[in-house]
Image (tube, rainbow, N blue to C red; front, side, top):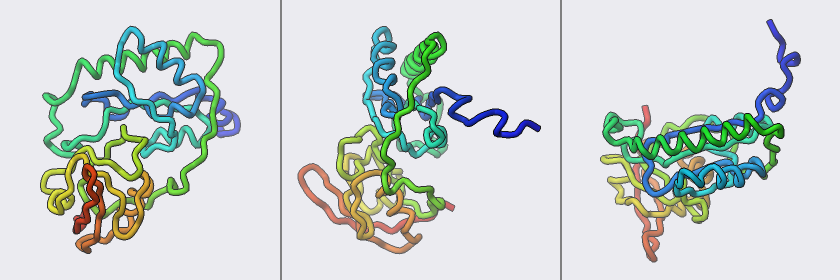
Length: 230
């Protein structure tokens, strides 16, 4: 059996991690996450996208709510392609007829072009250490369920903007809507997705809590009763 020391560290064996996480529902734009993990990503993305012409939203944050973060924490720069959560996520309604096949092919083409560029370049991507958000610690597992769909492309918003809510979910029953920005949940101030994740983690099933959202120019207070994921 080969010991880990003989293989070297993960960063010595893997020069970069390119991830495609839910790319089947391209609508307004492709979200590229983890761009801040290496100084080469912005240049490479711009160059390789010229013949493809995808509308792209850049997010520098490299501490992502996905498996790709494990690589970044071990010194490997990452680049993750993502087209956003949708109301059919994790439901039987997520059927093949709803996939944007042309958009998926373009995204695969872009990531493939970037990969080929890495293979022929004698220089490997540098690793940029970013400050870790205080809230992005390992989770114990979310059991309470609201049924909100965060809009991960809105990185410049204070709070968590929702791209939608699940049909029949506690959030919809409470009156939350697509376009709302959650700024407070159960007495916790919400400034980003990490705040929101941990606020949900602290909720108790069937115990009503207050949620404050910004809808247009109005601040609205609602009451929501979390359901169970189990």
